[in-house]
Image (cartoon, rainbow, N blue to C red; front, side, top):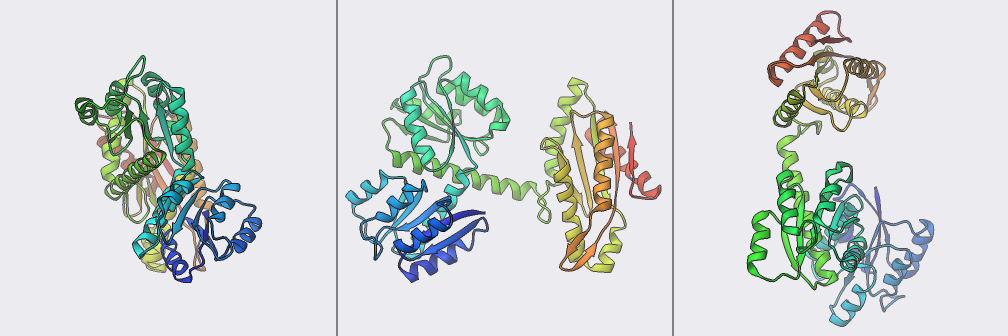
Length: 417
């Protein structure tokens, strides 16, 4: 949960904000209706708020002092105002402020909360700035860190590709210049698009090149957006946040297509799309794979005894235990009912045995408390280790091993080589 400080003297506005913020399960809001109450909350929480939503004019602080208070605790803020004065707005935006929003209708309240939500996501979002000018990199870093993005830097395209190749960096967006030594922004865009689609990794080009053919080339090569130099701080924030929101939307659509609704595990479609690539890569390298099928023992008894709602909880617990034991690189999917399939690479036969025996023991010792109803169950696992004619055939062989585990008394791990 991320903490949000909300300060507004209008009870009507506060009520609307409470409704809108209540739609976000990751937000823990704290409300104040005056400068004095805000000071009290800041002292109580030692200034540890992730973001603030502030009314610029309060009964005991008419001239925006609340913004300075939030700034003194390094809290980025979205400012609400009843009237927009361009001079005042520009003055406020020079402070640590994400945006200034006119609070004139429910839609503006919804927009303000969306800005808050975006900033909270930015805490866990990394962007890469690529420019041979140290000055421009610093200008961009200052703007991006203002909205709480994690910023990495590269001075040319080649250095950028090295940073991108480290998957642990988990970069969501690249902001690149055009003219750079070693590798320019156009070549960098082309190289990135060989590995990642526009809906997976965003690219914003920031360049002084105004020729229409340059902009067209970038867009054809796969850039998501183009910003001309010189740019304003507000333009960068708006365009970056907009592109990140689009990427989030694309991610949600992918999840709907690729993930199981009940458990959030990947589905069969995603498993085969990605599993066949893993199979082909390891086949070329002649390195063995492990395919495991896991199935809840006597699952029908759980449904018959406790009902399907408890049965659903039991299935979701399989995903939880597997998540706690598998590596991030392991491919796991719910194949249907209470059956899950896992594909593992870069693992030995001995480590495969140890892993799934540990998983079996975790299930054996686990007790689920579902609203006072305590249930426990075991699982059986069938594994095929090595290589067969296809991924489908490896799954068939692991399924045969699972059948052997069931027939041999359940709560067992059976391996075929």
